Length: 301
Length: 237
Image (cartoon, rainbow over all chains, first blue to last red; front, side, top):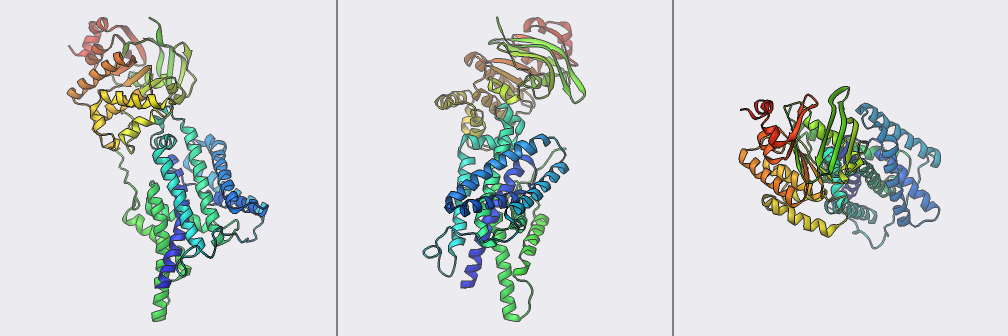
């Protein structure tokens, strides 16, 4: 039982990370119809920034806020400088740009900080945080931080005039212009926010997976799976998808371990977690192509 | 009367195709002007050209200021509201959000609240549906929402693209009655594009007739209404 709860808790913690990165993907997707393949590497870069600030003596949370702010500026700049001129470019050109960004961030991080794996601190006190034997301090902290960030985003989009303008711009850019919304800036702002959310995910996961330029590769795949499971056009769905994928992969591996213990037959285990995630994607896309929370878009032709 | 909007030598292009040829007209302050024409004559294009939503040449002056090269959203911020063809509903937002997003550029928050109340006075049906998703409204309600949303911009000029499109005659009459009230009570000048020429000529004081991207006739509504060609081609008697 205790082991089951531990697996559940670690699933939730991983799920929180996937949820944050999936939300970053969805935020850009709903306003541009593009999946930013460089989202993970941007998050990794932000994580290195926070590491650098900490190694210069900054407090964890100071470095956290500074790195998130840096990511915002980085996201806005990338949109304005690199993607803006490509506005009417075909999808393939933009995909190439995303892959290019991925490679650039990866190698720049490697050049600056080397490919050696670094440990990354956790800001959550070991002793009086978490529930002994069930959820560790860092895991609980990750879930809480992610929930706070998601809550703030929800409030921003739901209740502020700027958030409303961004939603309007994503839904119907032409009409948004006709009510005076500067749609181009809304896109840049969306990029900034997505990069910031990604940075939170990176900084939170670095303690678990350690810091290296390739740390986000697998996590981006999970985030992508989460976004698809939830429905690529649904921010709430992406978050739910993150937690679903996080918990499900652990549960499947746990069940596999139990079966092996009982019968001695190895069917599935921790090594197949990513496979499980991808199978979930295939099943969801086959059974419910719009995702669990996505809406089916019917186009008149 | 001074002109609120002066258009001179306006050309418009979709890609390589030219669809307006040296259009010129004036919209007086406070009045309702209508632009008539058959399908494809360039009515919608003219409205889009004023807001610089397509490639244009020529001069467009609003309140004496050249607005030809400005971005659409900047033109709108000068208080020109465009109620587009197809109503432009933000379908996934609520009715309330559709209205509030149009006040996004305004800093006078207290006045915005007062405006919202007053505007809902014209459209009691919208008040009942404030929290409903706008995509679930009927066509007539969405048209009302589009006009109400345009009013939230506190416009001096309203460009209306076929507000009667696809609506039942009774609803159309209701909407046109409200438009007349808005014109008088809110002191909003209007440029109305319509297929329904009889209705438009009743509402407007001035009319321009477009044919294949050129203005072929203009004058006060009563004169245009009695022109033989207009009667035969657009009024059907």
